[in-house]
Length: 186
Image (spheres, one colour):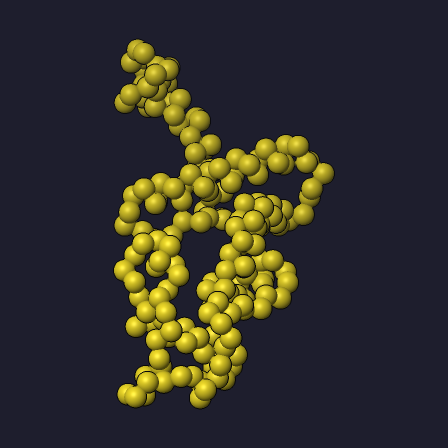
């Protein structure tokens, strides 16, 4: 055993167990770690991953959120609802991510995906309409096609241009029957 608090191998007073003082002290104070693990298991951001830095990051987020909750409750003892920790964590996550989600909601490529747009609507609490990035949307039947029947190439992707990646060619942005925008890439 290694400890920065216990320097000598003193055996406890109980002759029956005959455990060193370091072990007795650990057994007496270990409930804090057990309680922390129990509280972290209730609400966690951890996901399965093979990358240890990511697992460490998840653990840091969980511990920081629990520490923030404990500090919050010390300053607000009047809150007594049974799900106050869940409400606190939801409020904390909205405060941390709200501005980023608001910015991303202005990106037409992000809002063109239905599942992302609906998640953003849930968080922001308002309706989002997908904006058109590459001119006006046309129906699939009105899309310009070349001699082989493929959709004609319009230009290169502006994200690839900005990030100096391989130049991908974009086809016309089309509106499907269920009003979802489809952007085909070659």
